[in-house]
Length: 531
Ligand code: ATP
Ligand code: MG
Image (cartoon, protein in one colour):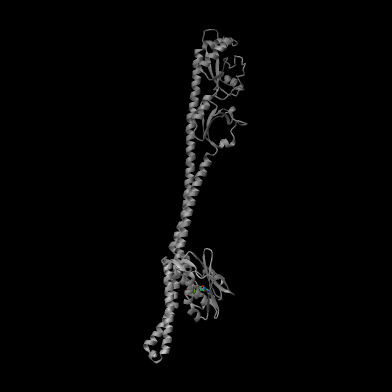
């Protein structure tokens, strides 16, 4: 299969596809995982709420039954006293005795009273403790109907009532009072303490009256009157936060567990953030890998290009001088030209010599570029006097300038400037720049070399009055094998390696090489080197 040099390799293309697919797969997996974890979290809270409400609801009904049993035992034990009070309900001494005895048996009682068999209170309610709900409950009890436990509102205290029947069989006539109802009111502190203690973290327990729709009865902080709110019906938000609800036996209550407002949303945000982070990490790594792959590919493509340029170089620039050397040597060996016409022979030998110099320069450049690419170009840094080094270089290029009918002029204000550099490499860089300036200068023009001392180093400039470098090509001049397609400079020949080598040398000196160019004025290359 033929692969164009600018095409990505199929293996690279597939690797990129896999790398891009990985975050997509991770995204799908992360979403599924997030969904699973969120629903597991929510289910766990529902399960905790279910077991808590069931256990606490049964504990509440157990404790209420216990109080009823205790009160029944009390009524049985104090039958005579109850009987006496029901006969003379206004007897204060008897009432006091009853209150005292109740207090001894039920220290946290709130009020105690008696009713007849029909459930009508028989003790005067001076303190207003017996409210409408109490009377209703007494009647229900008297009729033998179930009296569901509920909170009784009262100006003094919201409370619950425990009612038991008492009966004294004293053998007297039936119409005489020998039975009735004893009822004791309690502040249900045991309920809210139980709710408070049984609460799971970030859950809230409440007793809700299911006969009056969604009326709050008891919370962890007390009966509903303790709450700081306008009404005691559950709001829509509270209804949404219900995790589980269990009925409390023999009462008007459901024990309801609520989650706190942010329990689920916080966890969802936490999981989503975690998954986004994970995804972000995978996307980042994928992008990094794609970037790396593309970089490697770019290098491969550039190596392909270099290879092709090399082949074309060998084909044109090396083959031509080699052919001419070959031709001259053939003449010398197959003819007697050198004996018959030594002058002509010397002239041809000189041309063969020039061609071999061209070949050597090209081969030197290729070897330098190869070393440059491998990072193996050698440098020998030392203290050098830059003005004399530049002077030497200008002199070395004098004959080349003369051959092209170009003058070389050196301008410098200072006489000695020392810098730290590799003399041989600096000469090589300046020679490359001079060679270009000479090459592209029109005949009889002057190439000027300037050196200036600056605060931190020196600036060397090489200016010519040539055709300039056209705009489109300016960002490529320092690239390997880069040669302008412009008609004005193309004719001059070369390999396009000179400026790449200059840049590499100056970079190795931690200096800077730039250029200014104008089609009407020519080109100036500027090298800045620090002391
Ligand atoms: P080599 O230096 O390898 O023999 P070259 O001179 O073509 O070949 P570079 O020195 O790298 O290669 O220069 C790259 C290209 O930049 C040149 O081909 C030319 O188009 C342009 N260029 C460089 N210097 C000048 C200049 N002084 N004036 C106009 N164009 C220039
Ligand atoms: Mg050049």
